[in-house]
Each structure stands twice: as structure tokens, then as C-alpha cells.
Length: 443
Ligand code: AMP
Image 1 (tube, rainbow, N blue to C red):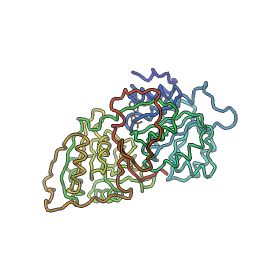
Image 2: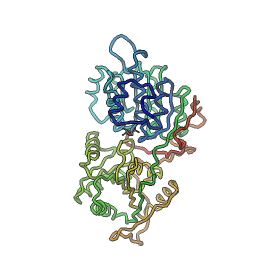
Image 3: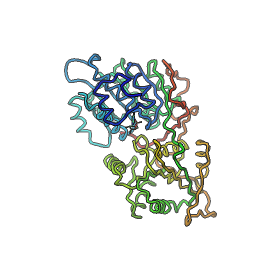
């Protein structure tokens, strides 16, 4: 089925064709007509499903449709606002808008923290049709009275569950009151927790409900292996594995920002080009590291879960869990970066005695036992006793699986009433792994 079925403008179809997409993904098949129809939407979809084009293509179409008019006098106002949790995601979404809208006369802007506010204020003085923003910086502009959102026709909350988990709910509420009451609302979320349902209930008007699963992250083309190793020898083992197997592009996950830094330094000292990305790194450092890694000039990218989430780095040959995640669902998300689209990939986990319980939880979640392989020269010392796992500054995990209350979650609030429930995508969204953590705000 091609993109021509949606009735999108020729300019958009042309830009999509240039991206090399031939068929819409399941989320696009459902979201594009729903958004074009003008109603509200609640969509269960994660990064990797094609959700960005799922909302940007119909938004671009609606905003460039001459029969749907904005105000005719004065400088054109901001007509679409896309709120996202992180700076990286903002950059990706805005880049998509520019790519898909390259043959249209629409103008987009990214508004994120971590960079000077001045150029953003200057940019706001010229035409902005679509604004992609993280909530914190947007509110900084509101405070400085440099932003007018009174003509927004379409609001998107992307990765809404993550925004709530990062503590943005109050910011979102402050932003909502600045928008016209009459508007189209689109909410994208990987999970439908009670908290998300409460937000949807207050935000959405008879939304279409769509759900799609992320491409199966525990697919057969991913080889999972656990290397039991002592906690203090993990770094040497990783350097050994990278060198021995000549791995050229490796994404390594650590639990903490500090751990990410230390590991990257160790690998560099071992002669392996590595950089760490996490919430404490400057925006330019993160962008540079990611670009080098994607381009293949950086061999190892060490990331915390929060830094990696939402970033479009996928189909990697090697993903390494230097430390197992505290939340088992994060394992699924981490290895979702490898072996996609038919490519082979491996998910390697370095597991010390402290992490046996985490490993059991992961195996239970993915319903399979992971094979163990001890590497010669790195045999675990049976005399070493387990120690409690020390978490990073983000605090411990808050499990917010469906049915379990999380921070700020209010029970008994009315859920959004679905206009139509379609489930063409397979797996129910409530079973899509919840991916919640704290820290790393997008401001
Ligand atoms: P997203 O889930 O929006 O982050 O998209 C994940 C990746 O899929 C991005 O690299 C997109 O460029 C790509 N993509 C989106 N739509 C399609 C499509 N219809 N066909 C092939 N690739 C796509």
C-alpha cells in the first residue's frame, strides 16, 4: 500500500518518496487518516514505529491546505505546537518536518534548552508555522513574553508518558491554558498508564484510539548472550570483546551518568574511540557524539537509558548492557536498537553477581532464558558476594506498569472516551513495555 492512498498533497508525497519510503508503517496507516480528518487522537506507539511521520505528514498537509485558513492579517501565527520531552527528540522531529515539508511554504522552529535563548527570540520575530519545543524552555519564553500561542490549531504531545515521568505535568498544564480551546489534540505515548489516561481524559475530545507495537525487539535475528563476570572486571572484558571481535559500532548502556563517563574514559585509554552521552552533557556535545556515532567515525557510544531513549539510532550490529537496567522493560528497549529490519544483531550483557535478580526479572519478562557464556580469562570469582546496586542521581526506578500507581497518579479520573477503537497493529499498547525513569529534563 503506497502513500498515495491518503490524499496527501503532491509536494508531501514527493518529499516522502525522496526519503525512500515506499509503504506506510502500521501507525502511519492509522494515524494519517485520523489526523487528516481533524479529530483528536490517542496513539500508543514508540520510537521506531514511524510515528513521527504519522503525525507530521498530516499536520503539514492540513497547514498547507488553503481551504483551512489561519488569520489573514498580520504576521502568520504559530499554528502547530509539538511538545516533546527531550532536546534530541525535538531536533529529530523538527528535522523530519523540514524534510517532509521541503516543498511546502511552511516554516518550523525548534525551541529547546541547553542553548542560548537569544537566537530563539530573534527567530520568533519571523514566521513560524510549526513549533517543536521542550516544555521548560517554552515556558521561559512565555515568561519573557516572547511567544504567542493564542492561534495554535494543532497540539501534539509526543512521548507523553515520558514527559509525565520526567515531571513535566505541571509545565504541560501551564502551557495548555495558553492555547485556544478549539484545537486538534494528538497524544502519543508508549504506554497507557492511569496517569496518561487521566491526562487524555482532560485533554482529548472523543479521540480516535490507535495502538501499534514496536517492531518486536526480542526478534529471532537478535542473539542474546550473557557473559558472567566480576563487577570490577567488566571494563576490561568489554575492551577485550570489542578488540577481539573487531566491533566497529557499539552502543553500550550504563545505569548512571558517572558510570558512562568512567567507562568511556577507560575505553579511550584502551585505545577504543568512545564518547558518553547523558543528561549532564551539553547539547552540542551530545549532538556531536551522536552524529559521529551515526556516521561510523565513533566506535563506541556509551549512553544512559534516558539519553538513548527517543534517539533514532537503530539497526546497530552490537548493543552491550554494561550493566543490566533496573527496570526489565528497559532491556527490551535497549536491544530494540539492534538487529532490526532483518539485519543480524547481538545483545551482549555483562552480568556480575549483584545483578542476578535483575537478570531473572528480564528473563521472566521476555519469556526466555538467556544463554550464559563465560569468557576465558574473565571467569567470575565465586568468593565475591553480591552488593546492593547503587543507582544514579536520577534515583531508583519507579515502576509504572499498567495497574500500578506511579508518582502523581490520580485514580478515579475519567478516561478519554474512544471514538473508535481499532487495533490493526497487533499487540495491545497496555502490554507494550513501560519505559519510565526520571532525570534528564528537556529544559
Ligand atoms: P520514528 O518512529 O518516527 O522515530 O521513525 C523511525 C524511523 O523510521 C526513522 O528513521 C524514519 O525515517 C523511518 N521511517 C518512518 N516512516 C517510514 C516508512 N514509511 N518507511 C520506511 N522508514 C520509515
